[in-house]
Amino acid sequence: DSTRRSEFDRALFRDNMGHYEPCQLVFIDETRKDPRTMRRCYGRARRGARARARYAFTRRGSGWSALGVMTIDGMIDCGLTKAKGVNAATFIDQLYLHVLPHLQPYPAPRSVVVLDNAVVHWSPAVRALIEGRGARILYLPAYSYDMMPIEHAFSKAKAHME
Image (cartoon, rainbow, N blue to C red; front, side):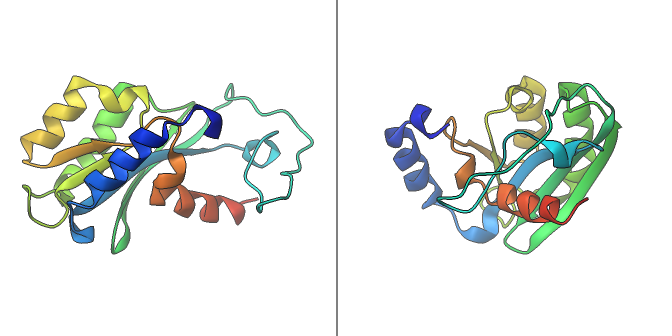
């Protein structure tokens, strides 16, 4: 929700990102797909156009959750889980298998992990795993998903799913 965004926090984040080289950044996020994904009531649309929908969407059913790992080189890894969603334990398992092998100590390439503000990302275990590799963590400002490039990749992929 853009009305809840803090422009100060967004400017501070952009300034902080300017201290890092693009090759150092690793963007991580989750997405979900189930048979009802294409029936959402809300979604993205071209500027000035409404997103059209006919059916309600819920997360009650089982589906697939995916963890994506994106760098300047594109999507470099992903983890798939058949589940209703991502919880802390699942996220930590996926982090261990699909993110940590790519991380290097700061200031090497792939040494700064960018996460959104999902509750599972704030787990002390997540911080311990990432910082244990010598990497740094940056969190997006609240309600600023537009600043996460992996979100655009997920949107593009989901646009082709039926």
